[in-house]
Length: 142
Length: 150
Image (cartoon, rainbow over all chains, first blue to last red; front, side, top):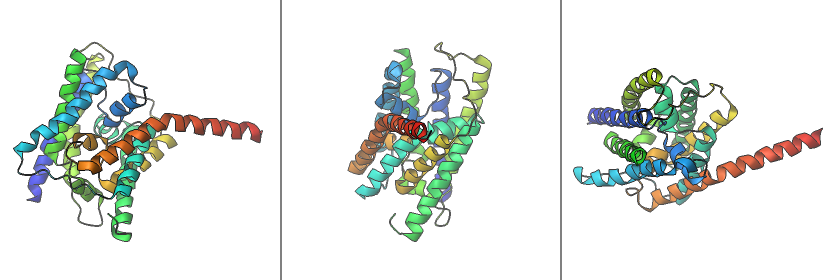
């Protein structure tokens, strides 16, 4: 049933793209999860706090409401606390340093043919690939 | 009020899309990065699906210049590649690979990931809060080193 996963991936992707298109054309903003959250918590986006908070509320509250539609929803997150802390720090610091993550640089940047978005995406996919190779196949910790 | 309504709608659709696409499943995300193991191409389909409506939206944006709610549409930043962009992305990618979470899915699955997801979110937010002062410190240190070297 691997191929069915691809179809659902594509459908979900279309929904994500429509969410980004709505945020861009109606609100005039780029839908980047790290930027929307980061600007809220570090105070740099104080003037647009309501919009940011509303976006995050929709993002956080709607998926759990959809869980009953599925037989089971499993996120299969690791329970290794050191990995979780290290990964959280790396993702938080890295995305703020680079001004974007998978949604901002990936979805919104690539579709705009932005060189910065494309290069950032190449960099984080390569780094992620190397980390999975090292920690799964060499060290065996993930 | 209108701005918040459409922002919430967009966030809701983003979250629903992340759930439908399977991208809140950390094993599928790590599977995409695991080129030398049991490679899972789903993420490429998600990315492809997301880029199509966004590509159209950028075309419309280029013709309109102003968003529906009145403010100017975001201008393309200067296309310079700097160390901050690349090294920041490398650090982000390393964390992404370690547990299979990036900011969007980490938020979408905040109530689905159990305590582990809360630990990740707390660490991520702490790092986000700490980033501007850390950068200021590095910049100040750099300037001190520069002036004393002269």
